[in-house]
Image (cartoon, rainbow, N blue to C red; front, side):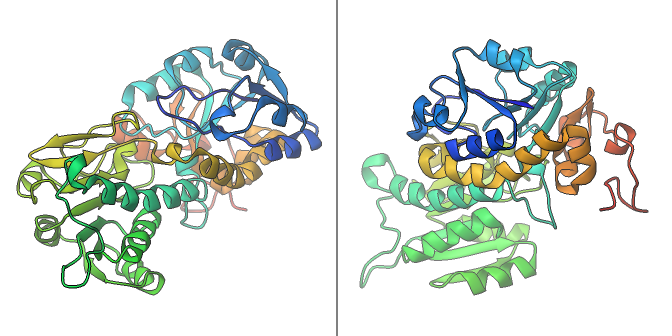
Length: 382
């Protein structure tokens, strides 16, 4: 198979979808890898590093798409890239279609098979989203601490306090991978950390993983209101795989927050958890509503591309190798995790959460790819 790796074009995106080591694995298995010129520069991976492992460097994105069967990316495709997709293409990347109904429609029109990293699911976990969630969670506490500084417009409070002066209160909505990593860093910085989640098992697990000033609370509307209204830093880490993020913080609640406190909405890729959240970039990361600083960068891990590129390739490479080796249809049949990852195929949305979020019809994957089914599931019996 011919695998194409284009340069990322989103503002302030410095990651690349594969490392030279990943190229080596694919070339050794008999595949051809095309890497767009300069695509690894932001991650300190020069073209020569890819060429030394067998990649072919191509100048333009048009050439790369026209010669490739599978396109491997980091972020969702740009309008220019969507226009280059054909029915014979498979695109494998983060898609985050729930808050982007127009992109979903455009991808349907291409006829391409679109597999989203964020909905590949194995045993209840999201193995391709997990490494980026770890990074985003850890960074959320760092950037929150920074924007609490007075010269940035924040309250002027140190996350960990000092002897005789209380630490900041950090409230985290969600005890998944993002929330757990945010709690670990915030607690390590000696803040008072409160984590809310609807799942008691997740809160129990978090207590065993994070040490420090940690309080876990069952998430209810009243609990959210009480804790957020007194928070210095709020980190939004709620996730429903494939679906629009739940709105947990109303504008009225933002209005009642401590002046010059900070919201870091890590869920913004899926629409955000605060009613006042809107996408920002690393170049212009914040804005203020009702005296509350909002940090809603959609590609937080893009700020640390060396770490992020290697972490992402570590997770995605086995799936890329599998698709390249078996072909996309066979790989989907044989791997339930990949079947969950298919968002669009043959012009139809095959992920129910995505379909519900964008208001378009949902089609079971089995209506497109026949395979032996269990009694209660659309996915193959393995």
